[in-house]
Length: 184
Image (cartoon, rainbow, N blue to C red; front, side, top):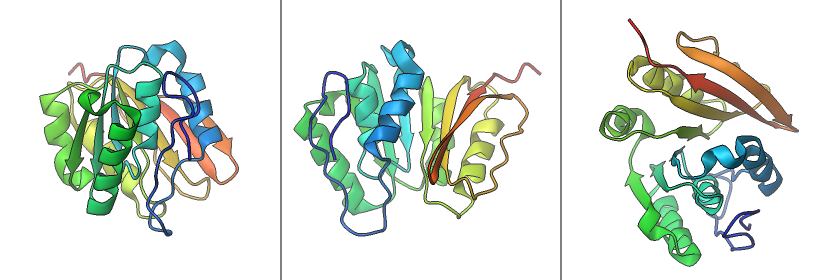
């Protein structure tokens, strides 16, 4: 797999062997960042359930100021670090080896991220659980992109969330949301 565009275009990304991870196809990654456009430049990007780190590295390639990667699998964390080194962007990254559901509140209370990408394993309810945590953080405001199967039921009708758009790419859906601060 390779970075599809930006400063790192063509750089090789290593992924974990086997079926335990499902890297986002490069055409879908390219489409994702084409939709985000220049809005990513100079912003902070949070890649949850990061796998190989390809999405966050693509954000850095497109001009994101920094990227944070959260992944529970130690082998994937090692691969993310290797990919960041290979691409020469380790200094723009932070990696947490942790359960997203246990660390997300801590991360978002400590630092602001303009974009959050949620790409968990399918059919485990992790999209909803992750959105619930973001929803509970009254002071958080930013764009949230959720990767899911079109066959999954994910609740996108949430208080303080605006649905921007949804795109379908075969068996992959990307849903773009904007989370507003709770003004209560």
